[in-house]
Image 1 (cartoon, rainbow, N blue to C red):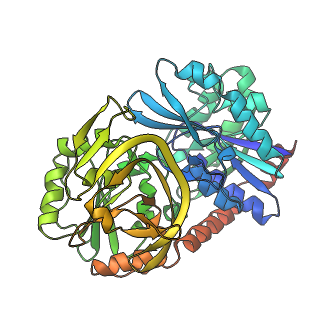
Image 2 (cartoon, rainbow, N blue to C red):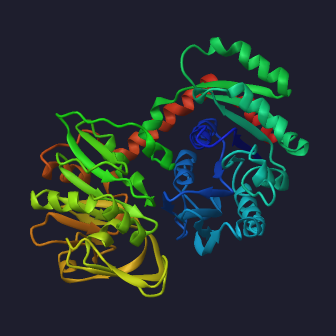
Length: 483
């Protein structure tokens, strides 16, 4: 069986998108493909068919490959909880925490788990498309590495290095990577790709040849800026830092950017609605008073993020929005924040204790060590939906007697206040369901024009695959993987 690995000259060079696009291109050529990322760091995750969780990007890559997401596609997932601490997920299940004190030693010990997953995937398909993390040029992280060259050398997988020309300095980034990494690591790199080019690729011909001369590596293409990427689910929080606007003739849905925001790709289908602006509110900015709906998103550290809501004064904005009779929705951690109290007696998120919530729902939450991870479906707002649950904590209270939805054949989920303006739910992915999204927008005085979100995602993947076929040497990529 064959494999090829895409590594980058840095973070956010487009590796995840390129892997997804190549997966779809290879499927179009008749190959059986599986995506794989040895180690990922993200709070945007997806629930798999085998009852675990993986990074959102690998779930999208599985869709591109035409297969169900599986925990083997991302055997090690780090979910940041604090500046120096991450929750460790191995083969889809929580295995504890990693901090600065034990990060390197613990990470190196995970290589066996990574190779087990890789070997299982390799046995299922023709080609494994592997994605690195960060950059191999981060030589300070090389000892114990399992995400880049540590994996590539252990599994003997050839590497293509991806450079981002949009940020500038791509010649130095690619040639510099060869200069700083170990010669044995550099020997794993068989070619390079230039990504995110705007304009006429012929303008970079001289630079392209210069990289080939400097490195001895083969150029596999200059990839244009792939505009269709905006239609795909978000994984990296870098997208939250990009400027956003609002047009006065569209509905505004506002969502505060919590320090440990999680699964914010819940909002992606709403962002694609032509009559809607989803405004992600950064720290230091108020939640706009003209918002038609406020959504409190998921969080990897609910109690700490609730304190951040107060520190930013967003609790004042939320209560003012509520007094104006406008709706507020909380998803997962956001749902817990809307209640009267959050108790953490076992210290799941930090020191044991409890805190007052925002008090807009008559419910209380107790955080527990048991994590619910399951794909689900049900009915809400008179419409069917599919989604998934990924949370710790059990919520009870009077407003739970008015559940938001019924899932799994009748189990109640979530809560609604007396006048229906405050809603909480544990279900992620709701807005990908066309009927429910249309019903929500109708309640806000708007309408849905997007249609089938999943069909939009697949169309975007097809268009990206076609772009890669045009601008990348896919045949050479296959040859490198096979030999």
